[in-house]
Amino acid sequence: MDLDPDTQAMLKVAAGDKQAFAWLFDRHHASVARFAFRFVGDPARAEELTQDIFVKLYRHARSYKPTAKFKTFLFRVATNHCLNEMRRGEYRVARLVTEAPEAEDAGGVEMPGPEGDRPDQALSGRELEAAVGLALGDLSERERAAFTMCRFEGMAYRDIAEALEASEAAVKSLIHRATLAVARRLEALQAGTVPARSRA
View 1 (cartoon, rainbow, N blue to C red):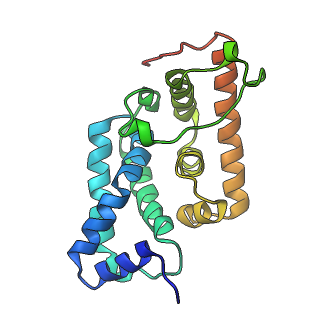
View 2: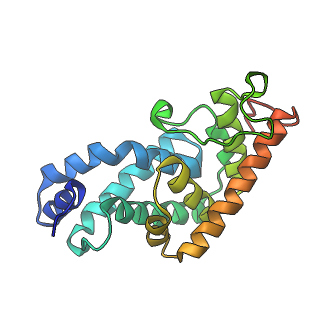
């Protein structure tokens, strides 16, 4: 079987290879930190969660089976950890607007408003992040997880379904509802009814 580099590295980690683990950490740290941040809205806490997630990954390496993409396995661990964290504490996700770690590499959410791409209607990057941040704060935890994996990490529905241990139909529904919520925020922002740089 032809295995991708991540899977090969994870199998080496399962055999006790610490260098392979360091390689995986360096390769995926930023995306996991961004994912955690979109739950807790605090860069320092997101970094702590990221460290915890990779510790869990290392501790459970021997139980890893290459039946799914490594990234799917990683985000299953990350999702479970973040959801558990959310159940323990209270967070205001809307703060993520301009403080997201590695923001320049975080990718974007292309949600054109009703007026299309007219220059006078275009939203700045900060305004877009503000609207997305406000919308994420209104989503359920599973909607937030599914939307983040899809729109910011570029994961396929099938992989998100495995990460969330849900059906593809359920994932499509979660992402659809989340996308509508974000679109509504963008429409409100374009109409001038949402503060562009809310710090709520």
